[in-house]
Length: 280
Image 1: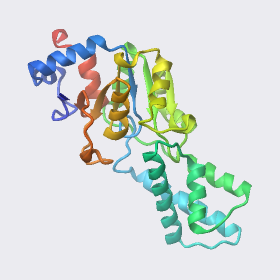
Image 2 (image 1 turned 90 degrees about the horizontal axis):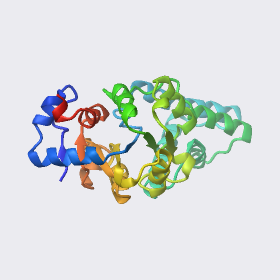
Image 3 (image 1 turned 60 degrees about the horizontal axis):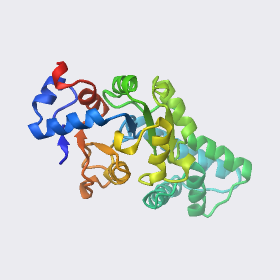
Image 4 (image 1 turned 60 degrees about the vertical axis):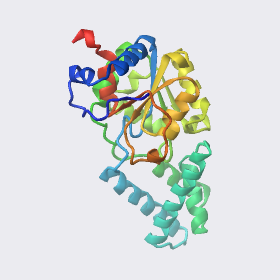
């Protein structure tokens, strides 16, 4: 049975959260809290906003495409904006195919896929410039509501690990973004698919996180927003799982891997894990 908290918004008080639980749900939550020794967190859609895409992300996607077009033109290869946009879409579709096979991918894979689609080649130095441009973000994606305070509070009680699939943006850039928001220091270990070679729900992603915080799977909870990767991956190893309720996103409507909790976000999870009914 999933403990359903997502129907209460992120401004709901802790007292009201507990009052809205059934006796069975309250008992299950108390048992989970007593057993809990560590947490792992997803990044995109859990800590950082990813949908709908922030305007800066949309603009930067266009900048990536423009940058590639300019590099191609410098080498006598003229492609229209429409052709390059189609190539960018093709690269994302390629990423999705790898993602479902639990194979990691990165900006180099994406740029090479685009060039293949365009039937074009670039010299090594030019290719390296394009990859570097694609990897970096001009503006950090915004944090989701309640994340900064929630993560910082959770880190005071539990060892935390980050488990993130990556695409264009590698772990070295994402570490800078977390530092920008004063969150990097909250995590004892950061696990990025591009550095592991697999994507979630591959068990290696979760095993590295558990090893990094020194916690057994049965004593750890993972929070994320995708049922197929976050919930299924955690549950397969014997971890508890909190799902950020996004039924419209990433095929979640077609997946049900029985998360232990369904929450609005990290802030709400911190409320119910850090503040007990008896402490109100």
